[in-house]
Amino acid sequence: MFYGTYDLIRPLHFIQSGQFTCGIGWQHDRSTRKKDTEILIGTSKEIAVKVKGRPFTLKAGDCLTVFPSETIIGDAPAKAPASFIWLHFINQSSLSYGHDYPNQIENYTCVLPRFFRLNQPEKAIALAAQLLDITHSNSSIISDDYVTSLLVSELSNDYFHQINQVPFDEGRVKQIEDWITANIFDSFTINEIALHFKISQDYLSRLFKQITGTTIKNYINRTRIDFARYFLLTTDWPVSEIAEKCAFTDYKYFFRVFKHYVHLSPLKYRNTFTSTFLNNPKVDFGFDVGKVVSILEKGLDTSIIY
Image (cartoon, rainbow, N blue to C red):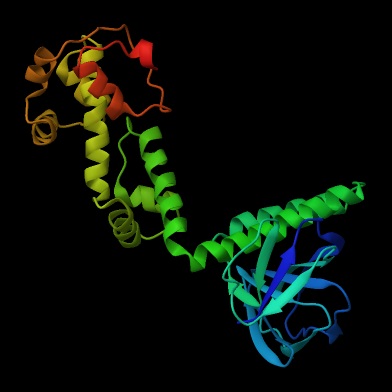
Protein backbone atom coordinates (compact mmCIF):
# COMPACT_ATOMS: atom_id res chain seq x y z
CA MET A 1 0.00 0.00 0.00
CA PHE A 2 1.12 3.55 -0.72
CA TYR A 3 0.32 6.35 1.74
CA GLY A 4 0.37 10.12 1.78
CA THR A 5 0.69 11.93 5.12
CA TYR A 6 -0.71 15.45 5.11
CA ASP A 7 0.24 18.10 7.65
CA LEU A 8 -2.93 20.02 8.49
CA ILE A 9 -1.31 22.76 10.56
CA ARG A 10 -2.72 24.85 7.72
CA PRO A 11 -5.99 23.69 6.13
CA LEU A 12 -6.00 21.93 2.79
CA HIS A 13 -6.75 24.34 -0.04
CA PHE A 14 -9.86 23.47 -2.03
CA ILE A 15 -9.54 23.56 -5.83
CA GLN A 16 -12.71 21.99 -7.23
CA SER A 17 -15.13 19.13 -6.69
CA GLY A 18 -18.15 17.51 -8.26
CA GLN A 19 -20.24 14.38 -8.67
CA PHE A 20 -19.77 12.62 -11.99
CA THR A 21 -22.22 10.19 -13.55
CA CYS A 22 -21.10 8.14 -16.53
CA GLY A 23 -22.90 5.90 -18.99
CA ILE A 24 -22.10 2.47 -20.37
CA GLY A 25 -18.81 2.47 -22.27
CA TRP A 26 -17.32 5.54 -20.57
CA GLN A 27 -13.63 5.54 -19.68
CA HIS A 28 -11.65 8.00 -17.57
CA ASP A 29 -9.48 10.30 -19.70
CA ARG A 30 -5.73 10.37 -19.06
CA SER A 31 -5.08 13.05 -16.46
CA THR A 32 -1.88 13.95 -14.65
CA ARG A 33 -2.03 15.80 -11.38
CA LYS A 34 0.26 18.77 -10.87
CA LYS A 35 0.59 20.02 -7.30
CA ASP A 36 -2.91 18.92 -6.37
CA THR A 37 -4.29 15.67 -4.92
CA GLU A 38 -7.43 14.06 -6.35
CA ILE A 39 -9.80 11.87 -4.32
CA LEU A 40 -12.49 9.71 -5.90
CA ILE A 41 -15.29 8.23 -3.76
CA GLY A 42 -17.49 5.65 -5.49
CA THR A 43 -21.23 6.16 -5.03
CA SER A 44 -22.80 3.62 -7.44
CA LYS A 45 -21.74 0.66 -9.61
CA GLU A 46 -18.07 0.63 -10.65
CA ILE A 47 -15.42 2.10 -12.91
CA ALA A 48 -12.02 0.67 -13.87
CA VAL A 49 -8.98 2.96 -13.77
CA LYS A 50 -5.19 2.80 -13.53
CA VAL A 51 -3.02 4.99 -11.31
CA LYS A 52 0.71 4.90 -12.09
CA GLY A 53 -0.01 1.85 -14.21
CA ARG A 54 -1.70 -0.11 -11.41
CA PRO A 55 -5.36 -1.15 -11.99
CA PHE A 56 -8.16 -0.32 -9.53
CA THR A 57 -11.90 -1.00 -9.66
CA LEU A 58 -13.71 1.82 -7.87
CA LYS A 59 -17.02 0.57 -6.48
CA ALA A 60 -19.65 2.25 -4.30
CA GLY A 61 -18.03 2.90 -0.91
CA ASP A 62 -14.43 2.78 -2.21
CA CYS A 63 -11.97 5.65 -1.93
CA LEU A 64 -9.05 6.18 -4.34
CA THR A 65 -6.30 8.80 -3.93
CA VAL A 66 -4.23 10.18 -6.79
CA PHE A 67 -1.28 12.07 -5.33
CA PRO A 68 0.53 15.05 -6.90
CA SER A 69 2.41 14.32 -10.17
CA GLU A 70 0.60 10.98 -10.64
CA THR A 71 -1.43 9.96 -13.70
CA ILE A 72 -4.89 8.37 -13.72
CA ILE A 73 -6.44 6.81 -16.83
CA GLY A 74 -9.40 4.56 -17.62
CA ASP A 75 -8.62 0.85 -17.71
CA ALA A 76 -11.84 -0.51 -19.28
CA PRO A 77 -15.21 0.80 -20.48
CA ALA A 78 -17.92 1.08 -17.82
CA LYS A 79 -20.25 -1.93 -17.93
CA ALA A 80 -23.15 -0.02 -16.39
CA PRO A 81 -23.99 3.60 -15.51
CA ALA A 82 -21.86 4.56 -12.51
CA SER A 83 -21.16 7.61 -10.39
CA PHE A 84 -18.47 8.94 -8.09
CA ILE A 85 -17.61 12.10 -6.17
CA TRP A 86 -14.30 13.74 -7.05
CA LEU A 87 -12.28 16.35 -5.17
CA HIS A 88 -9.08 18.25 -5.98
CA PHE A 89 -7.12 20.05 -3.28
CA ILE A 90 -3.60 21.32 -2.55
CA ASN A 91 -1.73 20.79 0.70
CA GLN A 92 -0.54 24.11 2.13
CA SER A 93 1.81 22.41 4.59
CA SER A 94 4.06 19.39 4.16
CA LEU A 95 3.13 16.15 2.40
CA SER A 96 5.23 13.00 2.74
CA TYR A 97 4.92 9.54 1.22
CA GLY A 98 5.65 5.98 2.21
CA HIS A 99 4.82 2.34 1.51
CA ASP A 100 4.14 1.68 5.21
CA TYR A 101 1.56 3.28 7.47
CA PRO A 102 3.39 5.74 9.78
CA ASN A 103 4.32 4.31 13.18
CA GLN A 104 3.42 7.57 14.86
CA ILE A 105 0.76 10.06 13.86
CA GLU A 106 1.58 13.59 14.91
CA ASN A 107 -1.01 16.17 15.84
CA TYR A 108 -2.58 17.97 12.89
CA THR A 109 -1.75 15.19 10.44
CA CYS A 110 -3.88 12.73 8.50
CA VAL A 111 -2.90 9.72 6.40
CA LEU A 112 -4.57 8.74 3.13
CA PRO A 113 -3.93 5.30 1.62
CA ARG A 114 -3.89 4.83 -2.12
CA PHE A 115 -7.06 2.77 -2.10
CA PHE A 116 -9.42 1.38 0.54
CA ARG A 117 -13.04 0.52 1.20
CA LEU A 118 -14.79 2.88 3.59
CA ASN A 119 -16.15 1.27 6.70
CA GLN A 120 -18.74 4.02 7.13
CA PRO A 121 -19.24 5.38 3.61
CA GLU A 122 -22.45 7.20 4.57
CA LYS A 123 -20.48 9.62 6.79
CA ALA A 124 -17.90 10.44 4.14
CA ILE A 125 -20.51 10.76 1.40
CA ALA A 126 -22.62 13.05 3.60
CA LEU A 127 -19.58 15.28 4.20
CA ALA A 128 -18.73 15.20 0.49
CA ALA A 129 -22.30 16.26 -0.34
CA GLN A 130 -22.00 19.09 2.17
CA LEU A 131 -18.73 20.13 0.54
CA LEU A 132 -20.41 20.17 -2.88
CA ASP A 133 -23.22 22.31 -1.51
CA ILE A 134 -20.88 24.78 0.19
CA THR A 135 -18.41 25.11 -2.66
CA HIS A 136 -21.12 25.56 -5.28
CA SER A 137 -22.73 28.37 -3.31
CA ASN A 138 -21.19 31.77 -2.69
CA SER A 139 -19.18 30.60 0.29
CA SER A 140 -15.87 32.01 1.48
CA ILE A 141 -12.58 30.41 0.46
CA ILE A 142 -11.78 29.62 4.08
CA SER A 143 -15.07 27.70 4.45
CA ASP A 144 -14.20 25.64 1.36
CA ASP A 145 -10.76 24.87 2.76
CA TYR A 146 -11.93 23.82 6.22
CA VAL A 147 -14.74 21.60 4.94
CA THR A 148 -12.22 19.98 2.56
CA SER A 149 -9.89 19.38 5.50
CA LEU A 150 -12.76 17.91 7.51
CA LEU A 151 -13.67 15.47 4.72
CA VAL A 152 -10.07 14.34 4.26
CA SER A 153 -9.72 13.91 8.03
CA GLU A 154 -12.86 11.74 8.07
CA LEU A 155 -11.44 9.53 5.31
CA SER A 156 -8.19 9.24 7.25
CA ASN A 157 -10.04 8.38 10.49
CA ASP A 158 -12.15 5.75 8.76
CA TYR A 159 -9.03 3.95 7.55
CA PHE A 160 -7.25 4.39 10.90
CA HIS A 161 -10.13 2.71 12.75
CA GLN A 162 -10.08 -0.17 10.31
CA ILE A 163 -6.41 -0.97 10.91
CA ASN A 164 -6.90 -0.46 14.66
CA GLN A 165 -10.06 -2.56 14.78
CA VAL A 166 -10.56 -2.83 18.56
CA PRO A 167 -11.02 0.93 19.22
CA PHE A 168 -13.48 1.12 16.33
CA ASP A 169 -15.39 -1.94 17.56
CA GLU A 170 -15.52 -0.52 21.08
CA GLY A 171 -17.06 2.66 19.72
CA ARG A 172 -19.65 0.73 17.74
CA VAL A 173 -20.58 -1.45 20.73
CA LYS A 174 -20.94 1.70 22.86
CA GLN A 175 -23.42 3.02 20.26
CA ILE A 176 -25.32 -0.28 20.47
CA GLU A 177 -25.40 -0.13 24.27
CA ASP A 178 -26.71 3.46 24.13
CA TRP A 179 -29.41 2.43 21.64
CA ILE A 180 -30.50 -0.45 23.88
CA THR A 181 -30.72 1.87 26.90
CA ALA A 182 -32.69 4.48 24.96
CA ASN A 183 -35.19 1.81 23.81
CA ILE A 184 -35.14 -0.42 26.89
CA PHE A 185 -38.85 0.05 27.65
CA ASP A 186 -39.82 -1.14 24.17
CA SER A 187 -40.01 -4.71 22.90
CA PHE A 188 -37.34 -5.39 20.30
CA THR A 189 -35.39 -8.35 18.99
CA ILE A 190 -31.67 -8.78 18.48
CA ASN A 191 -32.33 -8.93 14.75
CA GLU A 192 -34.04 -5.52 14.89
CA ILE A 193 -30.91 -4.09 16.55
CA ALA A 194 -28.77 -5.64 13.80
CA LEU A 195 -31.03 -4.15 11.11
CA HIS A 196 -30.82 -0.73 12.75
CA PHE A 197 -27.01 -0.80 12.67
CA LYS A 198 -26.95 -2.42 9.20
CA ILE A 199 -24.97 -5.48 10.29
CA SER A 200 -25.85 -9.17 10.42
CA GLN A 201 -27.30 -10.65 13.61
CA ASP A 202 -24.45 -13.16 13.77
CA TYR A 203 -21.80 -10.44 13.48
CA LEU A 204 -23.61 -8.31 16.08
CA SER A 205 -23.65 -11.19 18.57
CA ARG A 206 -19.98 -12.05 18.00
CA LEU A 207 -18.85 -8.41 18.15
CA PHE A 208 -20.79 -7.68 21.34
CA LYS A 209 -19.45 -10.79 23.09
CA GLN A 210 -15.90 -10.04 21.95
CA ILE A 211 -15.91 -6.47 23.30
CA THR A 212 -18.05 -6.81 26.44
CA GLY A 213 -17.44 -10.42 27.45
CA THR A 214 -21.17 -11.04 27.70
CA THR A 215 -23.97 -11.87 25.28
CA ILE A 216 -26.22 -9.14 23.95
CA LYS A 217 -29.27 -10.99 25.36
CA ASN A 218 -27.66 -11.00 28.79
CA TYR A 219 -26.90 -7.27 28.49
CA ILE A 220 -30.51 -6.46 27.55
CA ASN A 221 -31.94 -8.56 30.41
CA ARG A 222 -29.44 -7.15 32.91
CA THR A 223 -30.31 -3.57 31.89
CA ARG A 224 -34.05 -4.24 32.13
CA ILE A 225 -33.64 -5.83 35.55
CA ASP A 226 -31.58 -2.84 36.72
CA PHE A 227 -34.46 -0.55 35.78
CA ALA A 228 -36.92 -2.93 37.45
CA ARG A 229 -34.85 -2.74 40.65
CA TYR A 230 -34.84 1.05 40.33
CA PHE A 231 -38.63 1.19 40.07
CA LEU A 232 -39.06 -1.29 42.93
CA LEU A 233 -37.02 1.02 45.18
CA THR A 234 -38.41 4.34 44.04
CA THR A 235 -42.11 3.73 43.38
CA ASP A 236 -45.05 1.91 44.84
CA TRP A 237 -46.06 0.51 41.46
CA PRO A 238 -47.27 -3.11 41.49
CA VAL A 239 -44.62 -5.63 40.50
CA SER A 240 -46.67 -6.69 37.47
CA GLU A 241 -46.77 -3.07 36.26
CA ILE A 242 -43.00 -2.76 36.66
CA ALA A 243 -42.50 -5.97 34.69
CA GLU A 244 -44.62 -4.60 31.88
CA LYS A 245 -42.89 -1.21 32.05
CA CYS A 246 -39.54 -2.96 31.55
CA ALA A 247 -40.85 -4.77 28.43
CA PHE A 248 -41.40 -8.17 30.06
CA THR A 249 -44.72 -9.28 28.59
CA ASP A 250 -44.59 -12.61 30.46
CA TYR A 251 -44.66 -12.04 34.23
CA LYS A 252 -43.42 -15.55 35.00
CA TYR A 253 -40.42 -14.99 32.74
CA PHE A 254 -39.75 -11.64 34.44
CA PHE A 255 -39.87 -13.36 37.82
CA ARG A 256 -37.34 -16.02 36.72
CA VAL A 257 -34.98 -13.51 35.15
CA PHE A 258 -35.16 -11.18 38.16
CA LYS A 259 -34.39 -14.01 40.57
CA HIS A 260 -31.53 -15.19 38.35
CA TYR A 261 -29.76 -11.82 38.55
CA VAL A 262 -30.76 -10.59 42.01
CA HIS A 263 -31.19 -13.92 43.88
CA LEU A 264 -34.37 -12.54 45.46
CA SER A 265 -37.95 -12.35 44.30
CA PRO A 266 -39.06 -8.84 43.20
CA LEU A 267 -41.30 -8.39 46.25
CA LYS A 268 -38.68 -9.63 48.71
CA TYR A 269 -36.13 -7.33 47.07
CA ARG A 270 -38.45 -4.34 47.55
CA ASN A 271 -39.06 -5.23 51.20
CA THR A 272 -35.39 -5.90 51.95
CA PHE A 273 -33.95 -2.53 51.04
CA THR A 274 -34.79 0.93 52.27
CA SER A 275 -36.70 2.79 49.59
CA THR A 276 -37.72 6.36 49.02
CA PHE A 277 -40.93 6.38 47.03
CA LEU A 278 -41.17 8.96 44.29
CA ASN A 279 -44.18 9.86 42.20
CA ASN A 280 -43.74 8.70 38.59
CA PRO A 281 -39.96 9.18 38.46
CA LYS A 282 -38.44 10.31 35.19
CA VAL A 283 -35.54 8.21 34.02
CA ASP A 284 -32.49 10.16 32.94
CA PHE A 285 -30.51 7.96 30.58
CA GLY A 286 -27.42 10.03 31.32
CA PHE A 287 -26.88 8.25 34.60
CA ASP A 288 -25.73 4.72 35.33
CA VAL A 289 -28.87 3.03 36.64
CA GLY A 290 -26.82 0.24 38.20
CA LYS A 291 -24.87 2.73 40.34
CA VAL A 292 -28.06 4.53 41.32
CA VAL A 293 -29.65 1.25 42.43
CA SER A 294 -26.53 0.47 44.47
CA ILE A 295 -26.88 3.80 46.27
CA LEU A 296 -30.59 3.27 46.87
CA GLU A 297 -29.95 -0.18 48.33
CA LYS A 298 -27.74 1.47 50.93
CA GLY A 299 -30.55 3.85 51.86
CA LEU A 300 -28.71 6.94 50.59
CA ASP A 301 -30.42 9.93 48.98
CA THR A 302 -29.48 10.03 45.32
CA SER A 303 -30.32 13.75 45.08
CA ILE A 304 -27.25 14.49 47.23
CA ILE A 305 -25.00 12.65 44.78
CA TYR A 306 -26.66 13.18 41.38
